[in-house]
Length: 245
Image 1: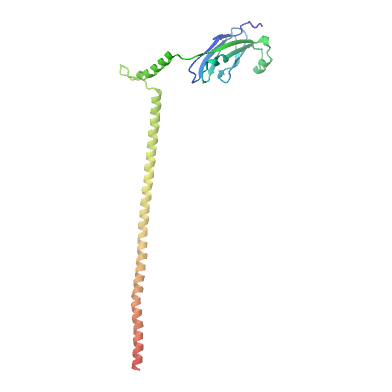
Image 2 (image 1 turned 180 degrees about the horizontal axis):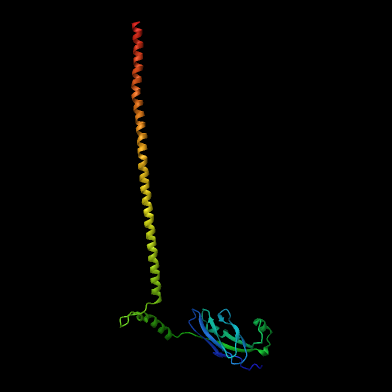
C-alpha cells in the first residue's frame, strides 16, 4: 500500500475549530469515515496532550462505517502566540485479520503501512459585536417568561422548580422541628407535674417529723421547771431540819 492511498476520510479535513472564550470546556467533533472494504485501525495524537481530552482516541472502523471523535479543549488562558503549537495527527492502518492487541500492532507496524493525516487547531475569539449581542440576549431573557396573550403562562425555568422543591423540603423540616419542640415541651410539663406530686408526698412526713421535734422540745422545757422545784424543796427541807434540830 502506498502512502498516497486514502484509508480514511476526515471531516473536517484540515482544521479543528474552537470558539472562545476558553473559560470552559470547548468541544469540536472529528468524523472519521472508512470508504474501503477492510477494517481500519485509527489513533489520534496531539502535540498538546494536557490541553485536550479525546474520546475515543483509538479504535477500529468497520468497512463503510464512520466514527465521531470528540475533541474537548480544556479551559486555558488564550495566547495568540501559542496557537501554532496545537496540532493533531490521525494515524490509520488496515487492521490485520486478528487484532488481539492494538498497542502491540501499532508498535510492530511498518512506516510504509501507516497513513498520517495532520490537522491544525484554529482558535476563534468572539468579536466585540458578539459580546454585545450576548449581553443583549441575557438582558432580554426575562421577557421570555411573560404570560402569553391567550392566558396561559409561560413555563417556569428549572431554577424556579428547584426553588419550589427546596421550599417544600424546608417546610417539611419546619413541621418536623415544630412537632419535636411540642413533644419536648409535653415531656417537660410531665416532669414538672411529677416533681410537684413528689414534693406534695414529702410534705406530711416533714410535718410529722417537725411536730415530733417540737413536742420533745416542749417536754424537755416543761420537765426543767419541775426538776428545779424538786431541788429547791430538798434544799429548803435540809435547812429547816437543821434549824429545828
